[in-house]
Length: 381
Image (cartoon, rainbow, N blue to C red; front, side):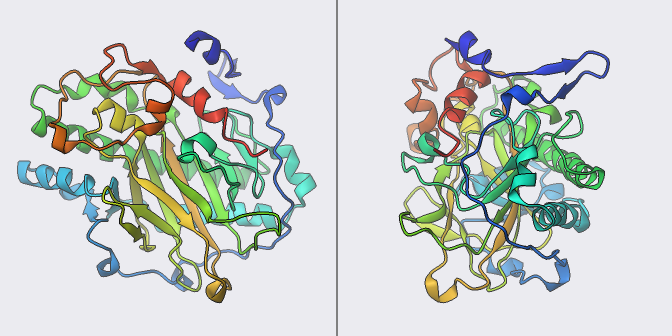
């Protein structure tokens, strides 16, 4: 069955350049809604950022350049296990990298019609990037069984090794620059996680997961959560329902709403809902279900979502984010040398459980199997 599912992914390789090129037969016909809204460019100095001291205890801000000693690595492991979500600051990426890519998407939406955007619809496996209209997606099985169309507009991007669907060269450059810079942050975070895991589990060899460190296994979505009311026939509980990413890790950059409404939230293991403030020029890191699976639920995946604003603060509630998914290696086998105590684990990879996978299975699984199971329930009806 894994081989059959793997064949569902359409890949066209140009042998001369060894890059993935678009196959138009694989374009997803999205069933989203037309949303003709203008989005003015963002100016970083004008945004309503939150100070670092506004961060709740469950979401630590970590200077990744200062996690080196045994004591620092031990504290790092404590911090990232609090909620499966943490901030990375002082990461070395210039702020204009994120602002430029936000504005490239905002300009695209502001200068085209929905009919024109149809030329850039994404393919079904996001192999070559592309556009997903408002309410064009719904996580379904990946969102704890609560189907609801996402109140968000998206543009997927695969990085400079791929020929992405793109409206312009400047759009391509902004997105490729962000992808490249984000990879450098992700690589540092993942290698630091491996070092910390080895302290807790001395027999663990980070080389087991070495193939995961590969920029071609990343893709991201440029997202806008517009100031859009729900339709009369729609029951809206969230802009994005609570869910656990299937990724290895997810990196996110977010800008705050003009009215400072904190839409993004994380739920801790004890059920506490914690709003996530927008901190200037920082990356959020979400532990994904794939990393939880590989560590036998020792590292908890972050349950998170985006709240809808209450009516009294609906005005000015638009927010934007850049979400980069770092995919695991193709062969996913939990480490035989990571064996946490029962009191150190939580139910952190329920999607894996729901498709018949077990952290104690020595044969593991493949990413193609997991990805295809997830994507099958991704696009909105």
